[in-house]
Length: 289
Ligand SMILES: *[C@@H]1O[C@H](CO)[C@@H](O)[C@H](O)[C@H]1NC(C)=O
Ligand SMILES: *[C@@H]1O[C@H](CO)[C@@H](O)[C@H](O)[C@H]1NC(C)=O
Image: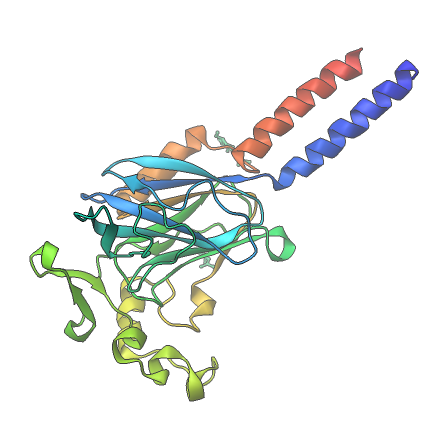
């Protein structure tokens, strides 16, 4: 092999690798700003790559970063009031996934649970994300994209809905002194097609917001409050990393945003960016030869 050909092959390979890395994983940072411990839950959608973890504890003020594969879709939530019983079975009063262990192992959250929903690298390569109260609410939660391009708005719910949850929707936990630990959706509480957008109410035209869904929407304007709340509740961003915060405060989210401006990478996911920089560096050396 002559030297120019070798050089050409090397450059072609590097450019190819570099372009592949633009759809590398993104980093999701899960942060607990609640005054109590939570146990995260992560569920991959059918046919998407499994994650390195499906659930872990977060103490107050603790964060944990998870590498999320490209094209991933799924849900992330927080479980509260968890414990292990005498037989070694792990369970939670809210957000329980029924696995009996801290890892959810492919099981979803029992309602009522606040859910962060993601479809990464969807139409036009965009990430779609939302925070949903369609299956009820258990704790405040936001999704904040970082370093992406496009809309990339923060979404979710800062408000503690448990405090003023309508009594007919209230879920109380004995371990919480009988206080409200979660707020059910009207669909779950009454199993009425009118609230569930099912049966005769299964289209956006026939299923309207109810006084119950309006309670959620007023308190959390960017979150899904019922099944056909798409217009104001789905957000997009491209090539971003995401911070999922449990019990965010508006002040804290500003602080997070401010903090991130110094550490944030503008553009693709951190891994992709580092990789591209390494490739560029190698390319520079090769071209000088
Ligand atoms: C995103 O935030 C901006 C600025 O607050 C706002 O003008 C815009 O309407 C928001 N986009 C969506 C889709 O809500
Ligand atoms: C990139 O990030 C730096 C901070 O690290 C910021 O000052 C700059 O405005 C950002 N540039 C773009 C294009 O977002």
